[in-house]
Length: 169
Ligand code: HEC
Image 1 (tube, rainbow, N blue to C red):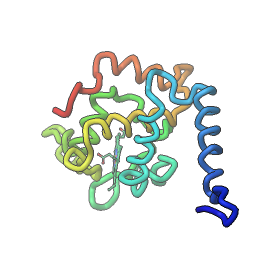
Image 2 (cartoon, rainbow, N blue to C red):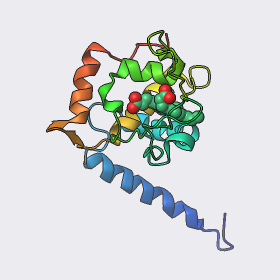
Image 3 (spheres, rainbow, N blue to C red):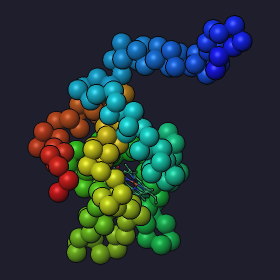
């Protein structure tokens, strides 16, 4: 875009980039993306989340109402992933299996009535995308606590024994 006097005129959207960079730097300075998860990974995780998960778990990962009450077809409604449900009980490895193989991975003869409504994403998401979407979900838990314990810290402890796989299994 060049004006008649030969000077480059900036299109209005050019201003958006410095502004969003400023916000990103501010968030980084506030420690968003702390705990060793690189900021790009959380950004990627958020995009993966909005494209694949928000339709069921909600755009704020708030889940659906009555998520712990089984529906007529035997499945549960999608639970909150924002730290209000029980996602934090599971280590990274278990959450990875949940996303890559779906809830069917937890079928067991001792739970004959269990039918999962959680699809498998192992064929459509890469290893990196699965790890990033789980890290994004965990970043939503903030400092939420359960009986005095910070949920993120409890989950990090469980994950020491149940870590992410190094590569896609
Ligand atoms: C078609 C709807 C649907 C979509 C899409 C979906 N989920 Fe789920 N998800 C469920 C349901 C229903 C459950 C409840 C558990 C069950 O039925 O096995 C669940 C359970 C989970 C759990 C276990 C939660 C817990 O608290 O133990 C995780 C983690 C999860 N989903 C992550 C994701 C992620 C990440 C995505 C996107 C990549 C996603 N889900 C997409 C329906 C969905």
